[in-house]
Structures are given as C-alpha cells and as structure tokens.
View 1 (cartoon, rainbow, N blue to C red):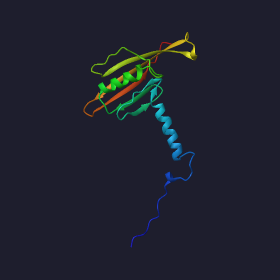
View 2: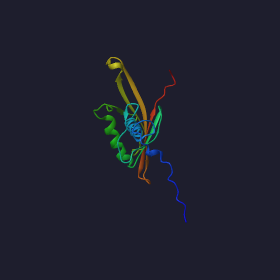
View 3: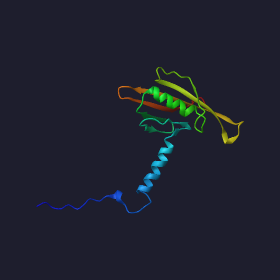
Amino acid sequence: ARAVQEPKSQPWRATAHSGPGTRAEYVRRATTMSEAADSFKDIAVPEGSDRRELYKSPYRAIYTYKMSAQELDEKFREAITGDHQKGGWQIKNDERVKYVGKLEVSKEVSEDGDPSNKKKLDYKVSFEDYPEAGMSALKYYTIQSYTK
C-alpha cells in the first residue's frame, strides 16, 4: 500500500489580496516594468515581434526582436522620428551597412519649459542582425564626455 503524501505548501496561493508577494503586487510591478521598457533615456524603444529586454542600466539597454534588421529599422524610424512625445529625434552619423552597425540620434530639449534654455541630447544606437535565427538586436548607449 502506498502512503498518502500531504500536499506541499503553495505560497503563491495566498489568501490576501494585496501586499508584498501577492498577485496584485506582481501585476503592479509588471505594469511599471512594461512602461519603463518603452523607452531608454526618453528615446522610444520600438514595438516589434517578440521584443525582449535583455539588459538595462543607466548607460546601456539591449533589446532583441524576432524580425530582420530591415524590419527593425522601419519600426525604429517610426518610433523615434514620429510626431509624438518620445519622437522628434534626428538620425546622424549613420555608419550602418545593410541595416547593421552604429548610428547616433540627437534631439534638443528645453529645460524647465524655458525655450531659451535648451540642451542637446546625443545617444548611440547599434543594430545587429542574426538571420540564421530570424532575430535582430537593438542596443542603446549613452555618449559619455570625458572632457568636462
């Protein structure tokens, strides 16, 4: 005869409806994370097929997509140059060959709503293509100045 085992503890089945470790708290965190994943330093991160955020720090972010570098380039251009809050960026120093390589994006923004007090934002963006896997990667970098 087999012994009947007691069911193991299931901490995810907590009866409380809010607080740390509950589903409600997890959903709140996931929503905040997805909102944060839509941009890096005020640059829009394009939506795309199976977008994944691999890494994010104050200086760099890496995203992968289940699409070609050409398709990613189209989505990227729509996201950053569009006429919306995260748009208005200009592409400069585009060194890419067949959609793969580096470019820089630039935008002037007014500080504290004062149009006469503008600062220039510059960031580097790198595109990588992995055709054998049907994937591509998009990397954002800050441009650090050591001359200040």
